[in-house]
Image 1 (cartoon, rainbow, N blue to C red):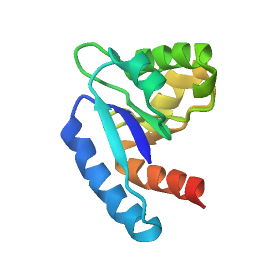
Image 2 (image 1 turned 60 degrees about the horizontal axis):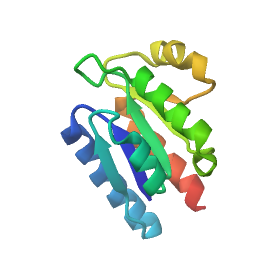
Image 3 (image 1 turned 30 degrees about the vertical axis):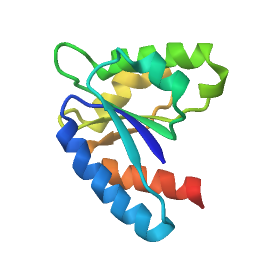
Image 4 (image 1 turned 120 degrees about the vertical axis):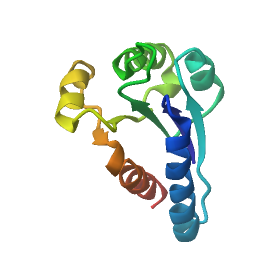
Length: 132
């Protein structure tokens, strides 16, 4: 299972990756591979050359880069790339409330919004459904 992650603290995602590998490996014999990006510079290349099962976007990517901007860029690529059309996106944050994330992302339709604290459970449930 391949996950593309936009996160300014890659070490935070390592623990999520390890937990998912333990749980999914034990239950389904599946390995999770995360590609972690701190900005959107390789976005188009990533989406065109790799097949991701889900994309995770942190709200605050540091250096004045917002997750909202990254979502706009992802949607622009998806709109011009039919094979990426149904790529699931998840907007998350450790410091922004879920309600605030929903407000920020409302213009994009119904993108699931979760707290960082609940992110690994959300991803596990999502991938479990995909594997079942």
